[in-house]
Image (cartoon, rainbow, N blue to C red; front, top):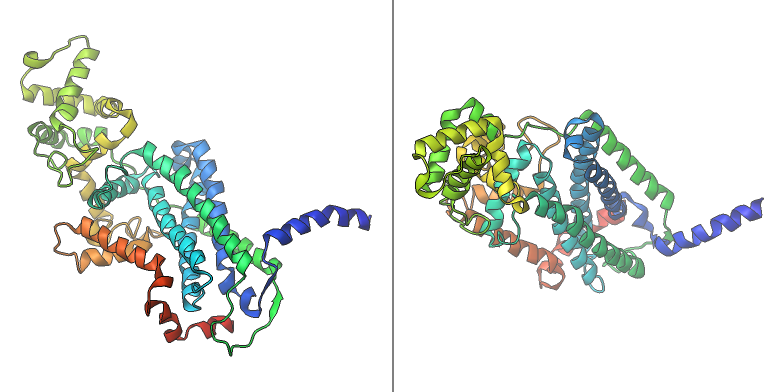
Length: 433
């Protein structure tokens, strides 16, 4: 019996030994050197919970108790993922573990880190509540300012779904394999101080997996105690029903081509459309065709009559449906831009204390746990200091962040900067743990 057990477990053990790092420096079993594995644990939980949510759909994760639980798991895991990878990068930086022959390992890890931040923010765009609507609008300003609005339209759910669910996870997964293989081949970095004494010991895999299990348990507890916040999304039907005068005023502004969308500063695709046609004339013509009274061109009634009719269609929910059907490939771009033009989005965000002026995007809503994208603090600092009076703040903020990102990625090659960790003397504290 004992022989059969060994025969069964032998191949599994052999595979494990090939996949896992077997020998580490004496400090390699500390929590500091488990952060990479804990990051992989988070990535696995995100993939699993995300796949369930994709198959079940938004209605499930927004309203069903089980769906809300999975949504909360996904959010808390994203929070943990970002925090753990930041700590992991700090350990690698503090111990100068990015120096030759590990430069490529650092570069791959840095690229994954920034992709992870993008992935987290794109996830916020897709949740389906007011926070995601407002974030998508603010994100559009950032990407347009960064000259990438023609490529990334955060108001296009299908596009962001593809990026968030397929593209970025696939790239991160590929980079993760390369990153780990380099670590396995070269081993955990030895101390740069030659006089620091250490031994080579067996890696404590049991302790490693226990830490991973403890992290998963903590995420589950947080998801139960502090579920993902949810603010009811805004829609055109609600605005038309509660404030028909505002609806009519916004339609008039779209017709006159003087709304925020019509005069958008970063006038790029997909905002290069005629607001008069999209928001007034085309919906009215579609409505007339549906009731068998088609009118066009010179036969159209006066503008006030058209607007009055469209307010009525908006109250019934038909107006927003028509907007979304005009170009399904970019849904809900037209509807979100119209909602933004009403001013209701900014008012609602201000009441929740999540506007840009209130360091928005770093919180979900006032007083709620968990927080929002707290990792966007550098952008908030820029917006409130250096770029406070900059009319091109989105563009300049994007440029500054891009430069910081490049410095971070190529740190191993930058003279003097790559010696900062040695000057700070933080490594010995980590090695002695």
